[in-house]
Image 1 (cartoon, rainbow, N blue to C red):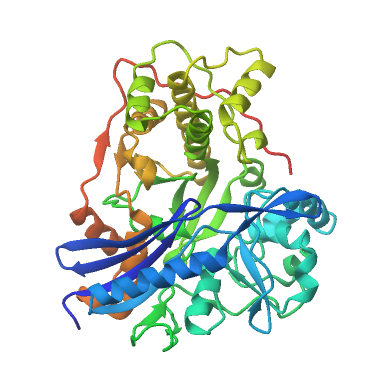
Image 2 (image 1 turned 30 degrees about the vertical axis):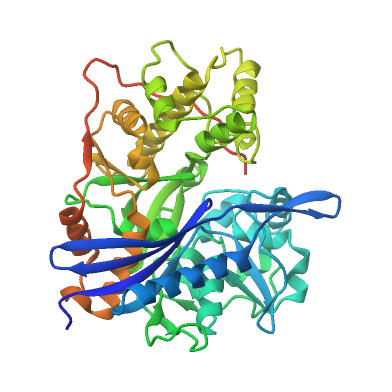
Length: 488
């Protein structure tokens, strides 16, 4: 068994992608970022409207270039793993992509909700798949997709890239659990749900688990014998692997474009109370359940910054966050889950309109807008964790914030203040670290063959010391006001 080893992690987010080489030994994990590239929606005129798609072909080109760089710079890479955002897919016929995958923020999905609920009502749907209602869940996208009749295979984004690298079709189980088509208890494809989405038989590939080898890379692509290894290919599943928790009573916030706020369980919670709270049961590595809620995230901030920059302003984010921290006047706490904040566009105008419609004073400056966004996110985190604690009877004693949001000091402190719990922030690259560790364990490197998730987390804790935020003693912990529940 090798005492150390390197693997390549392909980590794809909604705004950028990375290829990272991870080297693991008994002392911890070292990473080398060998490639970074932009990613984002592409608007294409389609039947009288601008439809949002992902440029999957360009994404694949960037991934392949990044992997070639990785193998030139690191001769000992033993495996490749791919993770990405959830729910979006490509349709294939006889192995050929039929068109660019739709982006989950495209507006077409709403018609799919009505079509599915006409066949299976919301309560029965939750009892089978345990998923939070989001209008862009894959089964709703499928129900709104007229191209299904042309396809003989559907592959989620990381599975599509894995297929292009190896020629092997499969569905990794953690990401499959986000589609709404996986049975929450059996963790297999559910024929009733497949029929509700109008899927032809055979469209969904065989399910595989994190740690399985998908297959060797096609020799014409890379001169390597390293296989593609399945990881928690839903990025949050990988991020949760790398939460540096040393105690069992923790909650996590995987904070980036979205915020995934939850706990880890051994079995799903399928009660009607969980459904009405709009909590979700998604698959984790090693058969764990990620019981969480998908809360809007730093998308609100990034879209606001984009709006100001398009208007001609130069935005120094660090200076803007410092100004937001210095705001002392009350700012509105708004419902970050409101559907008005989902599409791209002028986010400050939407926040102001939301406040105006409710007789609230809207923020008056960029600093106040940022403070309002971060207060509202922290309030949503606090409310969600309080609900999850009640639904699971879990005694949450600390909150781990991982991902890009762990660098936002104001957000971390506001989360500690509003939850009344200590917040441990970091690592930033939790998703890539989880991807790397699952690969290393599968390859039997660094003495980690067969290691438990707890052992992997201990290794992360030895590698990255989280920044600790304690609830402020001179600020009353705020309980968020009641929020609108998304209709189902």
